Amino acid sequence: MRWEEKKLLFDAGRGVLQRLYESEVDIKKVTTVFLTHLHNDHIEGLASLWITPWFCWGERSR
Image 1 (cartoon, rainbow, N blue to C red):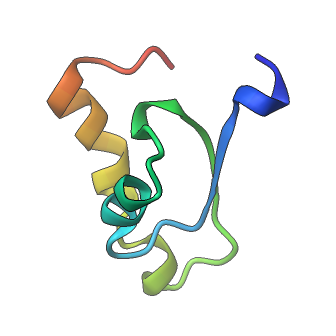
Image 2: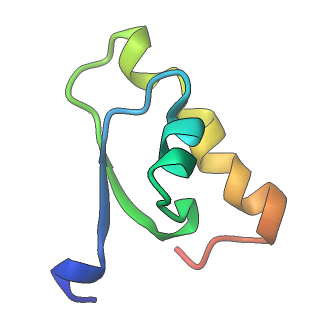
């Protein structure tokens, strides 16, 4: 996969799915999540980000 095709996400706080939707980013195409630090306001949405594509559209390819 080329770098132009990768979707990198830095931190996953509350509302991450809404912000991705508003930015017109397909959450199934997020290839990497970087966590800058482990405070709650930076990781709270990680579980939603992980399970939503599976729940809505079947298993993720990766």
